[in-house]
Image 1: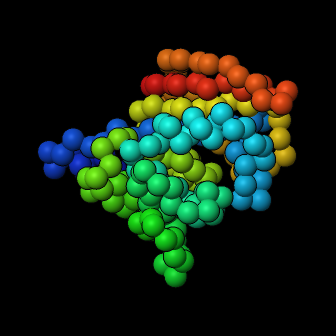
Image 2 (image 1 turned 120 degrees about the vertical axis):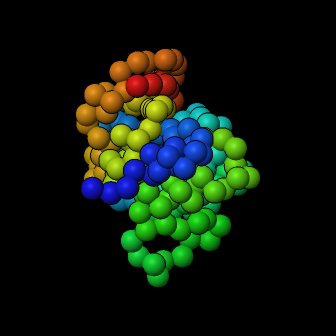
Length: 178
């Protein structure tokens, strides 16, 4: 069993940054296809940019590649098991636990630490998060990457919901807490 980074920080007397998750998910659980989002919703991208601004994003290599760079106005830590890979503008970690510890030390970013994907990062990070921001897309999509199907076992309190539509595609921005 691995070391739980938030527990380690707490035992050292540190107050950890809040750990949140942000994701867009199709009705059938799809979050990606071939390293990309299988949809384009400008309001969802704006929501993502606004929510993560000032914080630190923890993501896998495919998410970094999808965004094309480390986004300005926030810190980025890429979790990659391949030390030969390079992620300009981002810190690099070999595990989620290491990434969370790196995010904690990025003092210039006062906002939350964000779990931003992909599939493996969500699966490992979701149980550590206290808040989930999910864009629920009201359509099934073909995909090869999925969000944990049992997320509602962890997050049971719907705090807010705002519906939208783009080119006939319905979606809702939801904020969930434990």
